[in-house]
Amino acid sequence: MAPDALHSIEYKDAPSVLVFGDSEAALERGARSAERAGCRVADAVPVKGGAARLAAQVHADTILVELDGDSPELDALLERIDADARERRQRSVVVGPEALIDAIAARAGHRDVFHLCRPSEVERVAAVALATVRRPPVLHDIGREDTPAILQQLSDEVARIATALATLAEEEGGAPAGEPLAPEGTAGSSGKDGQAVDARLVRSIIRARRLRDRYFKGGLFADPAWDMLLDLMAARLENNRVAVSSLCIAAAVPPTTALRWIKTLTDQGLLVRCADPQDGRRVYIELSDDAARALAAYIRAAQRISPLGL
Picture 1 (cartoon, rainbow, N blue to C red):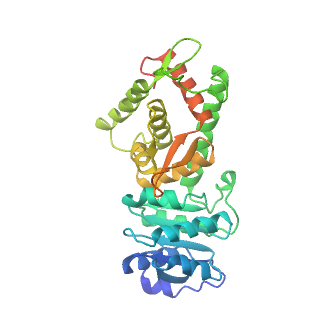
Picture 2 (cartoon, helix red, strand yellow):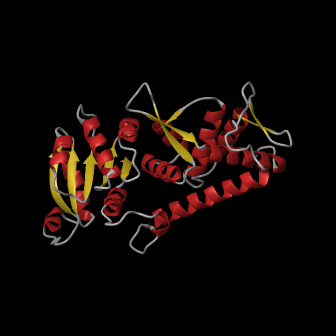
Picture 3 (cartoon, rainbow, N blue to C red):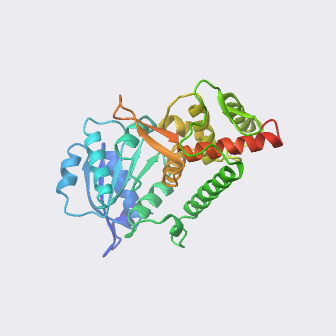
């Protein structure tokens, strides 16, 4: 759609979007995406002083933040956006480069803040459109006709994984709630049959999955949720911590896709966010205890079928 055509649209009761940007290009990009999402741009203002502006804003249905780089006042704006999300004032979309993944995740981690990284224009517009829906999004209700099909697929896949893991945990009679996955001083976790689940085994499974990319077209076997669960399982067994940016890499998909999965898996209770006590601009992602027990049970069951496990 041509820029002149965008400005000729009559929005009437269209939802309003307040755009923040750290450059003229970012402001123009944000305004264009909001208009293409069928929204009215309430204003487009710099990130500098953004927190104060947001506090004084009478009303905006959605906040869109477009970032090309870091800014001294970015943290304050993100914290304000997160606080507003928690108070259910409005949902927000934050678009930033890979270098800011951890900083954004640490300051604006609420489920109503949609975090995008290197998105396509379609992804950006879809996120703005979803953020302006005038009722809280419900996971089981996002498959309406006016919702992008990819969101329905994401919801179905996460529900399938959560159900499968929970079922396997029950069938295996895994470790009781609260019991550590790997007892202190051991390399892994053993089930009733004595088969161990250790970090080396999980890493070998991950390497085997990545080996496929050498022989088949990239993206053919994309399964970010499973790749992230495996990476977090290995890190847990190694007593290592995984930042959001590192987990995005482990997902082997574009960053925006990975961030969407992290948010959805967290909402499902499979992942847990943990603040870094030494760095306020970073959060770690961990498996929940239930997810870890279920995943260990799955790997033991898979090992009985095949030495590779997956």
